[in-house]
Length: 553
Image 1 (cartoon, helix red, strand yellow):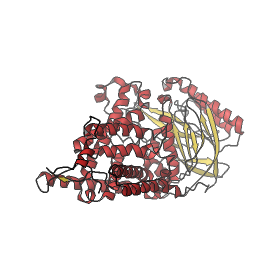
Image 2: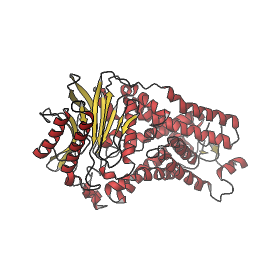
Image 3: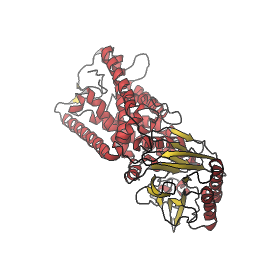
């Protein structure tokens, strides 16, 4: 089940069958032209696996096309092929960045940079597949190509400026059987499984094109088994430490696309009105906790008496504490806070969480003077946001339960980062809350992409999750990833559910970063081994040519 080309001595003649495989007949296009077309189609296909379409099998098809496109030619060509695939994927996937910036430069720059990571994967795989212990073992190629992909995916999720994990293959699988692998190995295992399936599909295609029906059929059967087998993994979702009656308020904004601070008081009033409407529906005292989103009150109620009165009235009406997002300003800097507000005592307890991963070029501008030479859009961020510290955990007193309930809370894009939520769960978090503000992204798929990540985190950690947004999409998700309630975009809506509180830890929680480290080590060893072999061949010792022909060994 080879998914790469086998080595052939330099100068050796290819068989007519292999030559036909290199240059499709009747098309007029050279082999390299086909690889570019395959890559572009693969990137576009993979994007449809994510929201809003969520056609999750297309992730296997799209990556399969990339692997087929990478079977030929040099590392340089592999870089180009990977880059084309990356553009095909990231340009539509990150379209929402245009809405946020108001001009295409941010969208294009981000997509090009992320596509560069796929180009790096192409190079890394072109080298890794030359390693002696990889090139001669077809089954190992299927595994190693997946590990190389995930290693690169992890690097782009951490570097530069803290990384950008958006578009990780794992987040396309929230409706697929593979999502049940999340509690076993987080995004590392699920993304690995996606590429393994893509590699099996690529191998099956090559077998069948070569009319090796038995091997092709066996590979298709293995593909089906790997796709379906995770369905057998149980997803416990029952309450382990009681339940929490939670209300979530999506207040909406007065004017779509308007500057946030100019309508901050109205946004806070909208969320207070939404709380009143929610209480009218469920009754006072029927909720243990009310959740408002990020930027529900960008004017800090801890320092502004009028906004404080608005929040206090809502808390009094609910007879329950409120978690809400606000901003804290200091000279030249600001912080994105999520705070606890209790009836009568307000924010006196000082319970809160400060966003630890502000978005570069969205919430702060690194190297501002340099990037201002490229575009004045950097000055749309007038005051840089500063990262907070500490664990993403908020202890919330719940009168009905007679105890404090620890809640893991991360803000907006932080849902894409594996470590922050895991730290909060390991510290005792029994429920996960994702407050977010999607008002800058218009009617794009950004909010549903984010909801898919929240669903993934629910399954990964075995916790109920509430994603609450100013404008939508908001959702309440069970520990098994099932969406219990969901709002629309740019609507004023409220949700209420009784959610299970859970304390057990999944294997993914216990393993932490260990699977990621394993992947990185194996991928690095393969790349280094391939480079060593390449250097030896270049010096004339056993020189061979890779990337040509079609091997079905």
